[in-house]
Length: 170
Image (cartoon, rainbow, N blue to C red):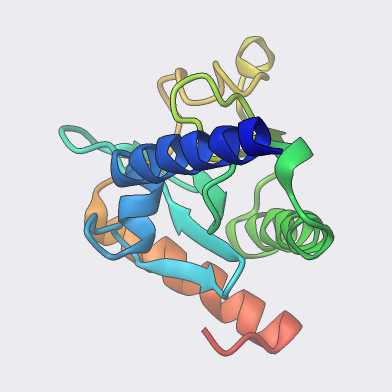
């Protein structure tokens, strides 16, 4: 029992340290500004647009984060799992309906940041077939890129769609 409690204390200490150095946790605390702000946020979930600091960003590239610092799907509690699945579906539908995406790529990697987050990447009409993958879709010359202002406008459209479709208040 004592050994078990020592492991719990060590694990809590490691987790607290990881949270202090976590990009996603810092974003949730408001220490990192995201263009367009939160598309949706509640006690369990944060949804926002990706933004690359030094260049324009592929428009519609959304991240869905679990608020609690957990590394993967296996660590979710039931409420988080339900919320994560539901918001993934709703954001995907919003990208199709409000932005005209013809396909939505979703994936979780976990290699770069050990805090559960889902990449949501739209594929737009006229994307050449050789770019039909989540890692290639943004690489063709006609791919829609935008700056912080264009990201903000896109986030407003998605937010408006979700408010109208799902009665979200954010």
